[in-house]
Length: 267
Image (cartoon, rainbow, N blue to C red; front, side, top):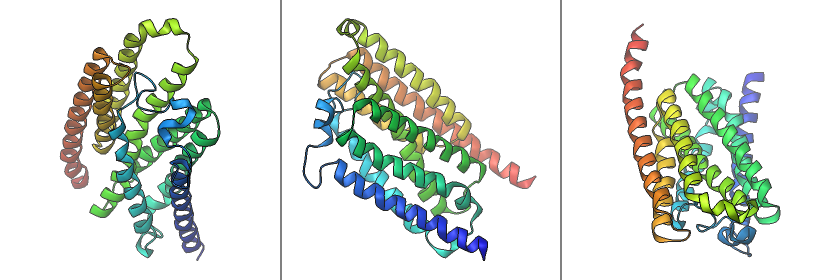
């Protein structure tokens, strides 16, 4: 009885977190009036906010992420998932990620830019924890793989590049004007770090979804630097290279993981 009660409590927590996320997203995006996200924080969060900001269409991925998280929320609420060990282990962390997701938008609208950096860094850390926990409990069904791993993998991958963009936007606002002379070099260096971390994560976890979401953001970052302001060809080229390498590493790692799985099972 206690286990069943705990399961219902976890499912209810995820539902409450998802509800908060959707409402906060609507408020933060200006659905009930007010400026759009691009206009918040004096435009610092727009596609022109920094050298590492993706072009506007990149943010359409949020629709897919929200749809995936809502679908996950419905699926995990079924009785079959109530006492599932995987959901018991990861449900609370996913709920925390959805709450932090909503809080970021509220923070961007009503508080300060540096607090958005803190918020998105916390969100990234929680999502990293989600990925680690999921790795310890392999998915047993296709629905689990798509809704739990897929939705949260996309969330993690996109927030990875969003954290870079958010931090760059904040630094652009507070850095001395003299730093602008080395903006290309700094952008390339940061993208190199993204490549190292992203490739290592993809290789260790064998997951494609995070790499695809990060690559999506990088591709639109390249578009932004080639067609908009601030213009930076070196940054654009580096972003394209990083995106391609990330996807290739993720594909190879995923194939490697699948080939190893039958051997592990047979043992």
